[in-house]
Amino acid sequence: MIADFFFNLTVFQVLGTSFGIVQVLLARKNNINNYLFGIIAILISIWVRYRSQLYGDILLDLYYLAMSIYGWSYWKYGKKKNETLITYSSKREHLAAIGIVLGCFMLMVLWLRFYTDSDVPYWDATVSAFAWAGMWLMAKRKMENWIYLNISNVIAVPLLLYKELYVYAGLTIFLFVVGVSGYIEWRKIFNNDEKERNSAT
Image (cartoon, rainbow, N blue to C red; front, side):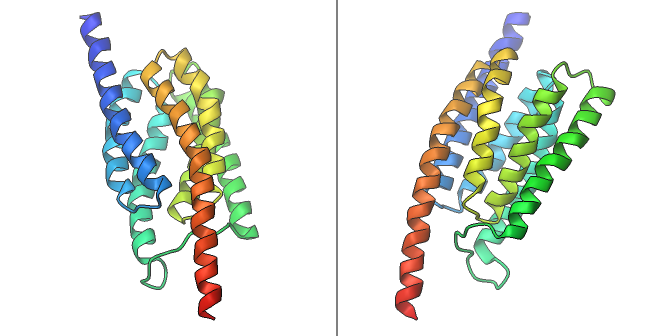
């Protein structure tokens, strides 16, 4: 019975990881369809993390789900019904991202410590806080999303190993590598867009 549980959990991890890999590779290519694969990966992840008592990450997944729906809409239409281009964050957006990290961390620690049986409240809250900010920046197609998401990834790897979620730990290491290359790829796209805009004026 226990063996069946872990086997099923591993199967779900592999399945979710597969969709997650496709999602992040499409995001790296600045492809809007990344959100479709991301939503499927999120739904699978919610089940796995529930069985592993990573409640902070479940809340993070629900946020990812909302941001994925928002992100798809924003990428496609933006504020002016035109496709949104990659840009760097403004000072206000930088402050908002930092505010998301701090606010999310404090709220998550309170919730995890006093309302769940989590044995890693501070650790879990830190992973979630940076990921919340990163996903918000991703939805707005901001370059800095890769930085925040990779901070979250670095902190998440030992947490996932501690929870014996080895497949997800492997995925997170992969996501870190893609995050680095994603930043480089987006910078190239941004520079090309800048050249096109400058040549058009």
